[in-house]
Image (tube, rainbow, N blue to C red):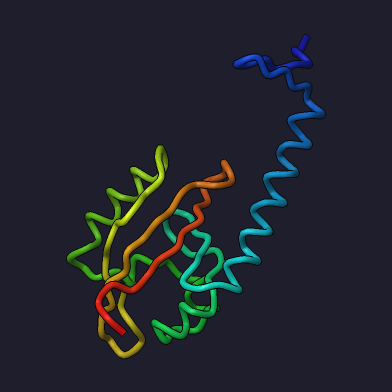
Length: 137
């Protein structure tokens, strides 16, 4: 017979409670995606692609948001930064990332340097991240 309760660290949740918690997390994820669309260089991403990007990404890089959200971002990362970026994404699976820098290719072929703060937020492999340009305007 399946146990109807999960107890860990003094927290007692039944299966209905776990289901409600999952719904709440999905709601937070949806809210984060909406926030992304409204403010600065903000994104929701997996370890390979953007799920949602704010309009500032198109303003900075020149790529349409549909292209940014439907392709892998590895193609936009400077080849010299890809190894470090992969290492940072691996680290991000276990702890927040603060002040990581890499370069992204613009539609014109130039590169801009970005500093990132990111952390996982939904328990399903998605990350909420904020970036800022560090090489001038």
